[in-house]
Length: 152
Image (tube, rainbow, N blue to C red):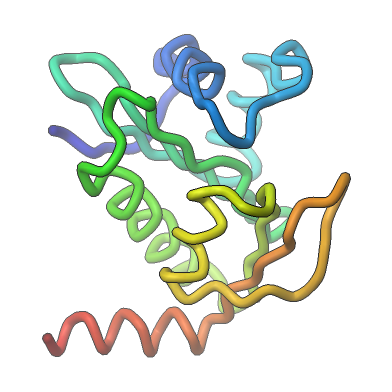
């Protein structure tokens, strides 16, 4: 299992992972284009991937422009292996090294993603879009969580 920064050559496999998930699915996969992915990993923020046997099985992308988690997905065949956690932590460590502004995300209610974010220290701050839960992570909460896990 290898974790590294995402690049342009990864976009096709990122799209495969994004369209393989069974929760937080896209109503229309064509709404998230390869050009969108490229912009988010090269201009607006940064992305990371997890590879197993040269296949991308998970990815995360954070947007510095809108202070938003744009994506965090793991292929269903690779659930519950800690991939999402590592991608999440890589992304937030990088983000909070760049800025101390709060970061937010939206996710569907009553999903494993909702549980994951609550357990990860995200706080519900309202709703977003069409019924999604809006979560927020502050610099202080992340710093305290990171410090606590380093002291274990």
